Amino acid sequence: QVQLVESGGGLVQPGGSLRLSCVASGSGFRLYNMGWYRQAPGKQRELVATLSSGGSTNYADSVKGRFTISRDNAKNTVYLQMNSLKPEDTAGYYCHGRFRSLDSWGQGTQVTVSS
Image 1 (cartoon, rainbow, N blue to C red):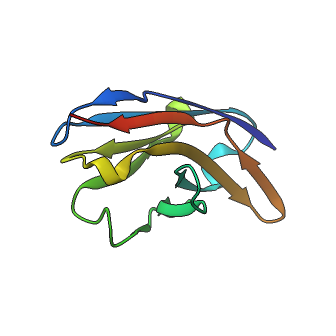
Image 2 (cartoon, rainbow, N blue to C red; image 1 turned 90 degrees about the horizontal axis):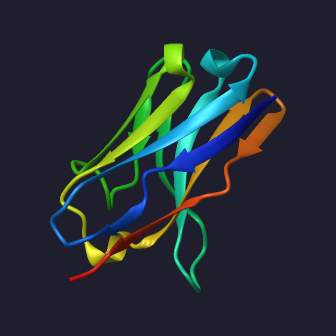
């Protein structure tokens, strides 16, 4: 089981960039499939990007070409690089990890894109 803590959110203008970090504590991080989700007020939580333990990635159509998910197993950290940010990207961003029946969520970090 791992515990996840996100950081790196904040206020940014449209067209700007942010990098979110998710640090895992506990055993077996490199075995986990990782992902980023987001949730805006009044909306359902949606998948943003996933990164498997084997290195495969998937992205929501709305962020493809703008966001990049990556991991550094030596640092027990997964990242979400967000470029060309739009107001529609404004949401709480949550880190997720899964290994077999184990499932972990972070507390979230707020991203606000506004002029």
